[in-house]
Amino acid sequence: MFTGIIEALGEVVSFSDAATNRHFTIRSPFAAELKIDQSVAHDGACLTVVGVDAATGTHVVTAIAETLAKTNLGQWQPGRRINLERCLAAGGRFDGHIVQGHVDDTAECIRADDQQGSWLFRFRHAPGPQRLTVEKGSITVNGTSLTCFESTDTEFSVAIIPYTYEHTSFHEIRVGSVVNLEFDIVGKYVAKLLGKG
Image (cartoon, rainbow, N blue to C red):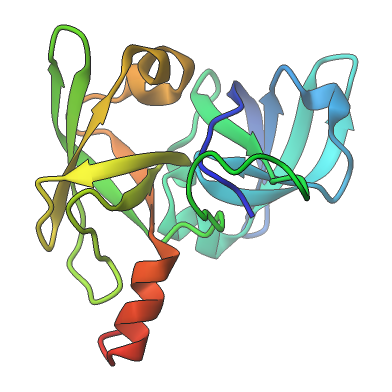
């Protein structure tokens, strides 16, 4: 489980394909602390560490075909900066919201405005009974726990403070960028109980 509080920015160093899988080598400030079989959220997608090279500060993860199809990982190229979060330690502080690391869908950025002190981003996603946002509810964008507003069936906005803008990949998101979304797990269960999911 994750909280959506980004721990560090990583960088895609390289990737290679093996049948339908894709192996990504990622550089990060905490690579030397990782262990094989550890779960790390990469732009919100929970991936298992399959290799660590402490000398180069890199780790390797594998994305299967379904992950590549349902997330923005298929667009990753060397040099891309991605949000990283290690899983929540038992007894750790819970600062964000419940994030599973299971990307539900992608969305397109349709607005990115400098508000002179904060940034406003608006995203559009496909409609669906479990793709729910509510006013002042939680949403995960590229692994970042955020509060959404101006919510509709297919769009929502988020406001980004300077710290988040600089310390996550939000400073690289532009109109047309594709991001990973994980909708609030509580909302998904409510939709299921009401027969809408």
